[in-house]
Length: 304
Ligand code: SF4
Image (cartoon, rainbow, N blue to C red):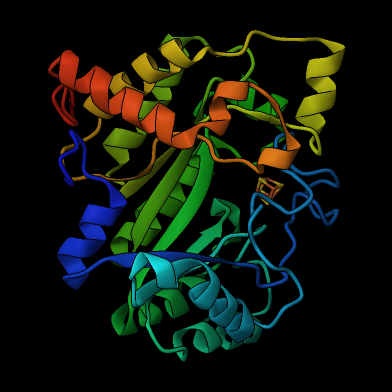
């Protein structure tokens, strides 16, 4: 647990690979059905121009993106193994041959020991699931699903454009194929009370998803959420409340769920509010401190 009171991704990867493993955020040039007109044109209201992949390098070949990031970012951290993270937009939303080309290209690079693929639950047809199952036998793989909330009123407001049942079914199908799933939740969406947010956490905890990402809500200037806030400001969580809520969320997860993220991490130059969310390390250490002071641990309030 890296001295933490929850199972974080870096300690899990160290346990599996015996050393530090870095993550390289990649842009495979995908779009999203929620942006290309199939389901919608403007995407989820918090989605920026770069499709939730604010640190990626669109239009550069995958191998070059990997080489660039390996040299530029990770050499100084001493990692020699990496997960290739297909982050921007919907990374299974392309013909199967294209997916194979991209993922295989990533895996052919030295040091790449696994793949992380961010997608939507409604973009996992059977042939893609078959391929992911095969990939999972060849490498360490996980699939990320952006659920954000279980509540349909909020899902409509954020324009997610799939029902909770699609998420539940996708998790079941991924589990049947022994594929690891990581679920994203946003804490602090407009109109959601702490009780509603924790209902989403409890739901996800019960699905048996392998990992979770908890994001604090932040507003970037390049999103429709920014316009919504400017027109009709809604309450944003302050840091103290977020720290308490994220800590409470961690207590409700099963002990072995891998926590990939416990705060939001947007592009600083585009961040509008809340300012505190720019200090990612400060938020993480406040959560660590709060959990210690209150003798809380991941799983201590988990109920099946
Ligand atoms: S599903 Fe993901 S990529 Fe598509 S619009 Fe929503 S946040 Fe953006």
